Amino acid sequence: VCGKTALAKEVFGETLNESRDPDRPPERYTARYYLKFNFLEQAFDRLSEAGFRMAACSSTGTCAFDPEQGGPADDKIWTSYTEYVFCRD
Image 1 (cartoon, rainbow, N blue to C red):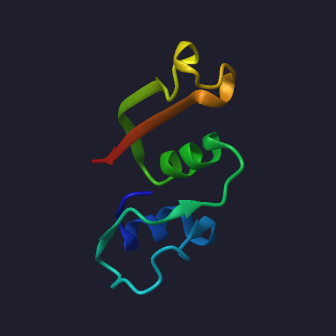
Image 2: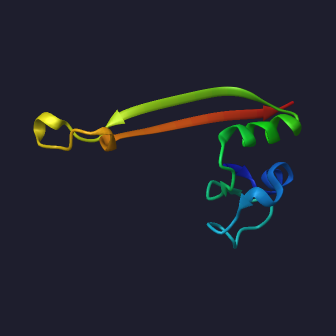
């Protein structure tokens, strides 16, 4: 979760874990929160209920090691990053 703290609390309530940035002012921007959901769709449902819509999505996957260069040759070498951007009119 990245953005204004008060807005994140409004949308996610008690499912927002604040332990990574506990000493911030209410309106300060932060990227140190995470959600306590087991499934990503739960967060999307909360955002939709609060009037948000998905504006963009970006995903990458990279290989951390080359097996031919002596690195591991299993699925543990892959890392991925996905970013979803939501906005409210």
